[in-house]
Length: 307
Image (cartoon, rainbow, N blue to C red; front, top):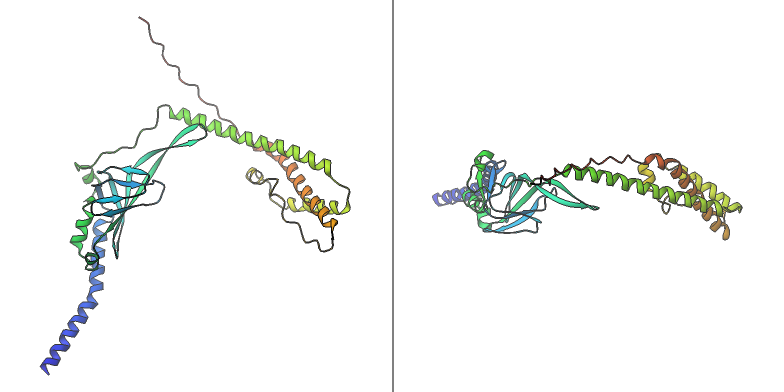
């Protein structure tokens, strides 16, 4: 009887132990997230980011980091932990770098710049046994191989390991470059509008020259006019987004027409729709021209005094 009671007690103890594991695991993960989420860190290895609005994967194995991120940030980069996820095969630390990166890009003949915010995801592979046992100390030891944790930003910035990176300054006289770019963009817009006006004029002349007196053609012509008139062409964006190739909707069913009559109807339908579009473009597009801003004069350089 005592043996049975002892056996039952052991079984109950084991069962209670297993039941308590998930709760213990959950508490461990909560403790880990509480300690790290929102904390400030200084990296101890190079990290990489695309700086394009999303987190860039950095695969961490021990102290080694592999990534396809375009921009490299040397060890000592300041970052804030935005999230921490404990997974079956490791831990993922999501970092935001507070100091932006000045990135250049081309628009026509101009080299322009933008300040980009950079995000990094450190995907740390951990031994399965460490994760399954939720060994908080061991997990943090692995994390500490790639970052050093601080409670506040000012504490991290007092660290001797902080690399003190600052965003590069904009080039001298960049305001004038922006003004020249704005004028160029406006002129590009006006040139595109003028090209559409010229195209509309040519298209309307061609359609007028080939209008047929064929009754089936005229039926299609009238139907095409009505079809395009139902399209909202009241704004510059709508006019410029459309083209002569795709403006006319599909023609209606023509069950009562046969043979060549169908071809004449369709030809008239296309011509009627395109003529309305050309005339609307000629009427409205001139008002879509934008003002070209003036570019400030380049400051004169002081003459050197000859001695």
